[in-house]
Amino acid sequence: MEGRTVTTAYTIVNLQQGTAKWLEWRSNGIGASDAPAIMGENPWKSSAHLFSEKIGTVEKFVGNAAMARGTALEPEARKQYEAITRVRVAPACLQSNKHNWQRASVDGLVADGSAVVEIKCGESVYKRTASSRQVPRYYFGQLQHILAVTELPCIDFFCWLPDLPEIHLSIKRDDHYIARLIVAEQAFWQQIMKKKG
Image 1 (cartoon, rainbow, N blue to C red):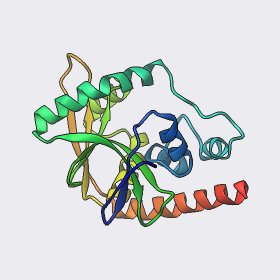
Image 2 (cartoon, rainbow, N blue to C red; image 1 turned 90 degrees about the horizontal axis):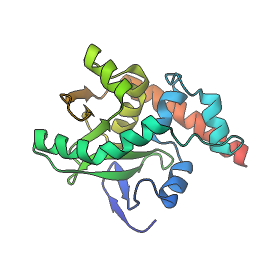
Image 3 (cartoon, rainbow, N blue to C red; image 1 turned 135 degrees about the vertical axis):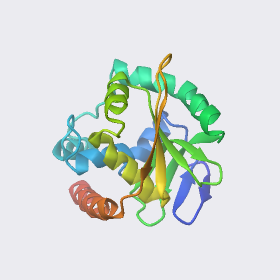
Image 4 (cartoon, rainbow, N blue to C red; image 1 turned 135 degrees about the horizontal axis):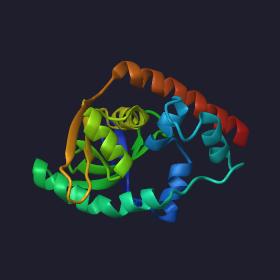
């Protein structure tokens, strides 16, 4: 890890998202996108499958065309978010100072650490969020994991697609959920460490 910035809650790890070093860092902990599977809220991946990925007995899913499109749209979505909120954010890799296995690759963090945003640019999540005006349940754990790492009171959830109105929701921290999440993640990580021996 090339450089670190330390706050009380977390350390900013100087890695560029999407690189081999970033993938290695992610594999050595539990990331925000792992949380829904661990909590049984991911309709596409069970905790057992995530466990197999983490110990290397199955190949990790690297994405599909829709995910690649969403990733490609993210920089423009970030610009739109900044224009609307008048707040500058940058992607960041965060590692909890309480639980060094707890990590989050956030889409946007304010330089002083006072706010964080999760950006989604997929058609499915956009449609679901637009119709319900709520975060889809399968992303709730991801957001609460980020709030656990950052210790912030809320996170912005920003859905954006070209030529459509943006969706901007503020999601509050759920301390009861986070308490359950940390217990589940810690038990999951201990099982991984035991298996890796």
